[in-house]
Image (tube, rainbow, N blue to C red; front, side):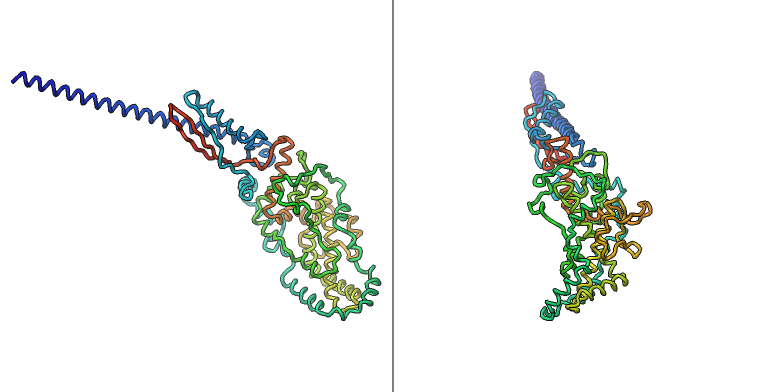
Length: 488
């Protein structure tokens, strides 16, 4: 009996030993699995950290010229002509250096590249808004309204609806008369007789291109460089290169006059909607009157933002045209309120329409347009010479006579310190508000042409602000897939 008990005890001990051994094997195996899992997890964390560092290195290679001069962060995804593969290779080299020999970087692929021009330049808008919040403490709209001196709701509508209705009523009533009622022989005689009395006669020979040259200040400096418009981010079609912004300066057609006076470009809304961008452009870009020592591809940068032509001269002349058109509406609105001037215009119109008296109201408004145009010449001449002009004038601010066209460029100018109104560059802010979204594309144009002076291979189409990286890294025989998104 005792022998049997001893044997049974030994058998039980063997079973327990085997059981414990198996448990220990399982626990050890589990321990090894946990250890391996932790190693892989730590390897993933380490690799992810290394990738974050590598990506930060790419972001740190932003274009220094654009950041220093325009406060915008972007990097060239092709590394100035080397190709996107070069960017991937730099990330791979950074990973291999950081991770060491235990890791093998098997693949690096850049995807989800977002350039600064995509989505209607949204990334550029965001960076400009961020910068201007700091620069103007979020008061860009108030700043512009203070500069312009009029609320945005009224800004782009110099003529009231009532004034337009009154003009139209008189003009339509006059133009209802049949052409047969006009004695054409008498018309020819009357026109020839009154040609010298009609201020429009000389006006039609004075195109705005000629006027722009006559008012050009002596200190104007035009760059001889030509912008290849077809290669610029803003280029859309060939028509955009040959667009014009002329006003019908003969003032013979009421429909043309009314169109010039009432075709609002909604710049009041533009002042509100794009206030940050307008203030930004005014701060970082040069103009005819706002010069700097910074070397740029063209000198009249603000004028380029407004007009988009290929050289300084064309942008200057087109800006002059736009300024004259802008001033025309406000000057015409004032004339309508000046009883003395309107009486004089009515008398002259009566003389000029002796062949068809019913046309007197139409000619009166055409003459008012002509006089407003002459005053606009004088206004823009003051502006380009460095003086100020009020947006909305009063009697004491009016400077020209009806027959003053040839003398507007030789008028004596007052002391700048005593003047009230807006400067040339402040008027350019208004014109920028008329441009719409093309303003942002032209900002990128200037980034490109200026940066290319230092980095010849730089192109805005390769200027990235966001990108994603897919990597495959092998560790201890296991492939680790890591995805990283980043941006400025």
